[in-house]
View 1 (cartoon, one colour):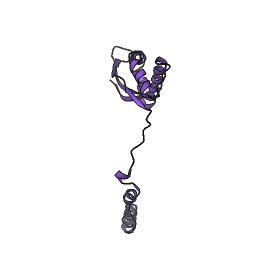
View 2 (spheres, rainbow, N blue to C red):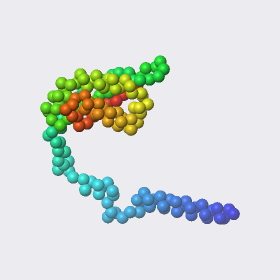
View 3 (cartoon, one colour):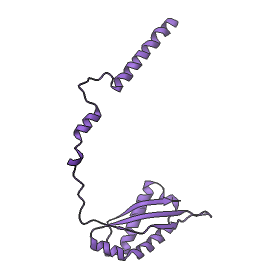
Length: 157
Protein backbone atom coordinates (compact mmCIF):
# COMPACT_ATOMS: atom_id res chain seq x y z
CA UNK A 1 0.00 0.00 0.00
CA UNK A 2 2.87 2.36 0.82
CA UNK A 3 4.45 1.54 -2.54
CA UNK A 4 1.28 2.55 -4.39
CA UNK A 5 1.04 5.82 -2.45
CA UNK A 6 4.72 6.57 -3.08
CA UNK A 7 4.24 6.12 -6.85
CA UNK A 8 0.72 7.49 -7.42
CA UNK A 9 1.02 10.74 -5.40
CA UNK A 10 4.16 12.02 -7.21
CA UNK A 11 2.65 11.09 -10.60
CA UNK A 12 -0.51 13.10 -9.83
CA UNK A 13 1.58 16.01 -8.59
CA UNK A 14 3.66 16.01 -11.77
CA UNK A 15 0.58 15.79 -14.00
CA UNK A 16 -1.19 18.57 -12.05
CA UNK A 17 1.87 20.82 -12.15
CA UNK A 18 2.37 20.19 -15.87
CA UNK A 19 -1.26 20.94 -16.64
CA UNK A 20 -1.09 24.13 -14.58
CA UNK A 21 2.09 25.23 -16.35
CA UNK A 22 0.53 24.48 -19.76
CA UNK A 23 -2.57 26.56 -19.03
CA UNK A 24 -0.47 29.40 -17.68
CA UNK A 25 1.44 29.51 -20.97
CA UNK A 26 4.83 28.30 -19.77
CA UNK A 27 5.15 25.90 -22.72
CA UNK A 28 3.99 28.36 -25.43
CA UNK A 29 6.25 29.07 -28.41
CA UNK A 30 8.28 32.25 -28.34
CA UNK A 31 6.99 33.11 -31.85
CA UNK A 32 3.43 33.41 -30.58
CA UNK A 33 2.38 36.80 -29.25
CA UNK A 34 0.36 37.19 -26.11
CA UNK A 35 -3.23 38.43 -26.15
CA UNK A 36 -2.10 41.83 -24.85
CA UNK A 37 0.36 42.29 -27.72
CA UNK A 38 -2.28 41.35 -30.27
CA UNK A 39 -4.76 43.77 -28.71
CA UNK A 40 -2.18 46.56 -28.85
CA UNK A 41 -1.56 45.93 -32.55
CA UNK A 42 -5.26 46.16 -33.40
CA UNK A 43 -5.97 49.23 -31.29
CA UNK A 44 -5.36 52.48 -33.21
CA UNK A 45 -3.06 55.18 -31.92
CA UNK A 46 -4.75 57.83 -29.75
CA UNK A 47 -4.05 60.57 -32.29
CA UNK A 48 -5.71 58.49 -35.04
CA UNK A 49 -9.00 58.21 -33.13
CA UNK A 50 -11.67 60.68 -34.14
CA UNK A 51 -13.84 62.29 -31.48
CA UNK A 52 -17.45 61.13 -31.47
CA UNK A 53 -19.72 63.22 -33.62
CA UNK A 54 -22.44 64.88 -31.57
CA UNK A 55 -25.57 65.90 -33.39
CA UNK A 56 -25.83 69.66 -33.49
CA UNK A 57 -29.50 69.60 -32.56
CA UNK A 58 -29.05 68.20 -29.03
CA UNK A 59 -29.14 70.65 -26.12
CA UNK A 60 -29.02 69.75 -22.42
CA UNK A 61 -30.86 71.84 -19.85
CA UNK A 62 -29.78 71.36 -16.23
CA UNK A 63 -32.54 71.50 -13.66
CA UNK A 64 -31.85 72.72 -10.11
CA UNK A 65 -31.03 70.01 -7.56
CA UNK A 66 -34.06 68.62 -5.76
CA UNK A 67 -33.93 67.69 -2.08
CA UNK A 68 -37.19 66.36 -0.69
CA UNK A 69 -38.66 63.72 1.58
CA UNK A 70 -40.16 60.50 0.25
CA UNK A 71 -43.48 58.84 1.01
CA UNK A 72 -42.76 56.53 3.96
CA UNK A 73 -44.86 54.88 6.61
CA UNK A 74 -43.83 55.32 10.21
CA UNK A 75 -42.03 58.12 11.97
CA UNK A 76 -38.66 57.93 10.28
CA UNK A 77 -38.19 60.37 7.37
CA UNK A 78 -36.38 59.35 4.17
CA UNK A 79 -34.83 62.00 1.95
CA UNK A 80 -34.04 61.99 -1.75
CA UNK A 81 -31.56 64.16 -3.60
CA UNK A 82 -31.96 64.20 -7.38
CA UNK A 83 -29.82 66.01 -9.94
CA UNK A 84 -31.26 65.90 -13.46
CA UNK A 85 -30.80 67.32 -16.92
CA UNK A 86 -33.24 67.37 -19.80
CA UNK A 87 -32.30 66.57 -23.40
CA UNK A 88 -34.10 68.62 -26.06
CA UNK A 89 -33.86 68.96 -29.84
CA UNK A 90 -32.91 72.61 -30.25
CA UNK A 91 -31.86 75.78 -28.49
CA UNK A 92 -35.39 77.17 -28.99
CA UNK A 93 -36.83 74.13 -27.21
CA UNK A 94 -34.24 74.59 -24.45
CA UNK A 95 -35.42 78.16 -23.96
CA UNK A 96 -39.02 76.95 -23.59
CA UNK A 97 -37.88 74.41 -21.00
CA UNK A 98 -35.96 77.12 -19.11
CA UNK A 99 -39.07 79.32 -19.03
CA UNK A 100 -41.20 76.41 -17.81
CA UNK A 101 -38.71 75.28 -15.15
CA UNK A 102 -40.86 76.43 -12.17
CA UNK A 103 -43.81 74.41 -13.45
CA UNK A 104 -41.55 71.38 -14.14
CA UNK A 105 -40.08 71.56 -10.63
CA UNK A 106 -43.54 71.78 -9.09
CA UNK A 107 -44.59 68.67 -10.99
CA UNK A 108 -41.41 66.82 -9.95
CA UNK A 109 -41.95 67.71 -6.28
CA UNK A 110 -45.49 66.37 -6.39
CA UNK A 111 -44.36 63.19 -8.13
CA UNK A 112 -41.42 62.39 -5.84
CA UNK A 113 -43.48 62.94 -2.69
CA UNK A 114 -45.69 60.04 -3.82
CA UNK A 115 -42.72 57.71 -4.45
CA UNK A 116 -41.62 55.24 -1.78
CA UNK A 117 -37.96 54.29 -1.23
CA UNK A 118 -38.71 50.73 -2.37
CA UNK A 119 -39.78 52.04 -5.79
CA UNK A 120 -36.33 53.60 -6.24
CA UNK A 121 -34.45 50.38 -5.53
CA UNK A 122 -32.36 48.87 -8.32
CA UNK A 123 -31.88 49.78 -11.96
CA UNK A 124 -35.46 48.86 -12.85
CA UNK A 125 -36.77 51.38 -10.33
CA UNK A 126 -34.55 54.16 -11.66
CA UNK A 127 -35.55 53.35 -15.25
CA UNK A 128 -39.25 53.44 -14.35
CA UNK A 129 -38.76 56.76 -12.52
CA UNK A 130 -37.02 58.23 -15.60
CA UNK A 131 -39.89 57.12 -17.85
CA UNK A 132 -42.49 58.56 -15.46
CA UNK A 133 -40.60 61.85 -15.29
CA UNK A 134 -40.36 62.05 -19.08
CA UNK A 135 -44.13 61.60 -19.47
CA UNK A 136 -44.92 64.12 -16.71
CA UNK A 137 -42.51 66.75 -18.03
CA UNK A 138 -43.76 66.42 -21.60
CA UNK A 139 -47.35 66.77 -20.36
CA UNK A 140 -46.31 69.91 -18.46
CA UNK A 141 -44.56 71.71 -21.33
CA UNK A 142 -46.80 70.80 -24.28
CA UNK A 143 -46.45 71.48 -27.24
CA UNK A 144 -42.70 71.50 -26.53
CA UNK A 145 -41.08 68.10 -26.11
CA UNK A 146 -38.20 66.69 -24.05
CA UNK A 147 -36.29 63.80 -25.65
CA UNK A 148 -34.86 62.28 -22.48
CA UNK A 149 -34.45 62.80 -18.75
CA UNK A 150 -30.88 62.25 -17.58
CA UNK A 151 -30.41 61.38 -13.92
CA UNK A 152 -26.99 62.72 -12.98
CA UNK A 153 -27.27 61.84 -9.31
CA UNK A 154 -29.87 60.10 -7.17
CA UNK A 155 -29.20 59.71 -3.47
CA UNK A 156 -31.68 58.15 -1.05
CA UNK A 157 -31.00 58.62 2.65
